[in-house]
Image (cartoon, rainbow, N blue to C red; front, side, top):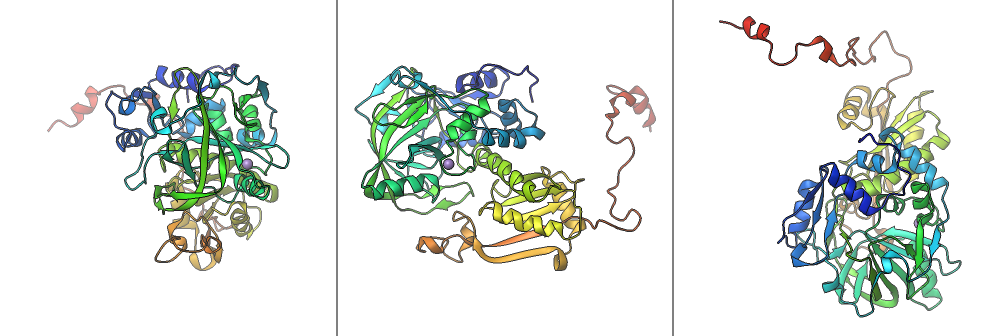
Length: 479
Ligand code: MN
């Protein structure tokens, strides 16, 4: 965490990248990096330590950046809070959206350059990421659409396969965008969309908010910024997009067309199989002068944290509504920031941890394994959680197993032998749930459940240690 005065200017992608560059957190790639695999391989190796800028990827004039949100402490820094306040601050923004402020169409920075004739394959430096991916994918595209019934917007990030110069295939999971699309199909109209690439860190985070339908995630972006987000109307449809975005692809999801999409390496670090999926027809591309293209390397920390932190914020609020003793939650990295939830609580009564386990399963269908621990365990440290399981858990009385619930369709273990391929959609993702109550009993004899501590161990011992190599010490070891 960099100590800096709370900035009053809204955070932009460019100011954030400059901040990373000025503090040696942005690596710059040499020319000649290939858009196929090489770019993603370099970004993956740097994931969690530095963002990477590729000034001329594959000889393309448009630079690509990746990994600028790949650490939890960077996300807290972008939100100008301490890491311990991150979830509450995010939740506060999600609960208190700020209506956006409209900029006249054609005047916004994201519309400085207009391409009426489009060729995605030459206009944008779209990387191919993983070994078995079908080809180039847009992975950091915010898909914005309006509810055909009332015009309220939704923002989501979905994977987008570039199929032709003006066509892309998309995976639409059964959530808000899908509902809008279904409504649009009913009206016999294609659904207008905008795909926005290159937004500031807070707008990216807002796009992943778990909020009810018709809660416009761009208003949550405004709340995270502490000032209304500037938006502008697309030039070919009514969708409002962040005015300061780098690139906007305007288009519409076709009514009946389906094209093969996949395989694609997804967040659980496995491939989704190829299937026929919905198609976006591109109408126009606009962008800033000298735009920057953002790619998220699938299954790496930028991807996992952007989804994980908003989920943690939602799950914490959800659990605290029923269980005031719940103090913190964490979706662990090993559980791909989706499947493994650790809950820290101050247990008031025996049995309560099992209620918390059941509550957590109800919080989000992705939650598969839950571990509940006491207040003296840091849920952000998997070693401490494992210690609690090792010493406070007995499988015959502290284990909760539920069969045949709905889980993540991207978890390949949900269906035996063949994964979810070839299985009808309504039968996909059927999953067991497991909860571990790793809390100690409320009452116990003497110190049997007291964590060993040495008085003074929290104090930095530097003041009581000789500095540098002590001549006295080497004297001690003379033969
Ligand atoms: Mn939504």
